[in-house]
Image (tube, rainbow over all chains, first blue to last red; front, top):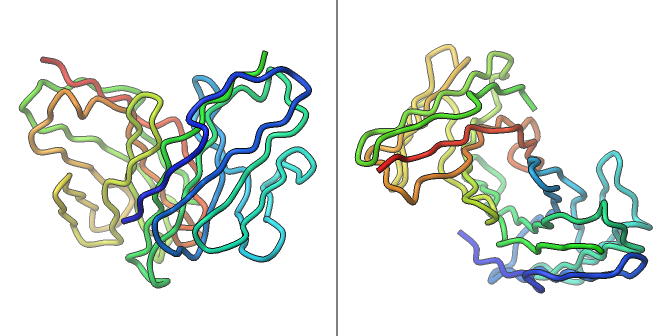
Length: 117
Length: 110
């Protein structure tokens, strides 16, 4: 398994500002992901954070709004830019551990609860 | 991902076995079935996964039908802390991209 921490755990921000969320895992992992969970909804994948290269975004998500960095195999950041109240959500980091076979498992961080006023 | 269908909600008495069904009739031969749960406002917790054989770990058992079109997650002795939303997922990129549906909201009743 993997131990994942996120900072901050929650924040209240003003519209038009940006927030950077950090994700730290206790061991090197091959893949890291960022998800969003809007109020009352299920999780939606935002992007795959690629180490040393640009993140791979899912349909409906763009780099200008959600820039992602992954400088090494244990750390990633997600920035929510130019925030609006519609960005109020829980943002979750996840990691994929394993050796590339059926034992690979995805683990999730505790999430960052963002409220935009 | 193969489409999965789960009941919206279920109740189970504390101490009894909770059996959560999932239909995945379009699953392909190399797609695994994964189960996660999300306790209120926390990150999803991995429970178990399997391909075609039944699996058991310290948290639960996973029973997959022979035709692989459905499966059942079994929590053998449910406690109040098992109250959560349970997600059945059959990703088609290994375990890389997880598509979360609405899941089953399981309520354990004292």
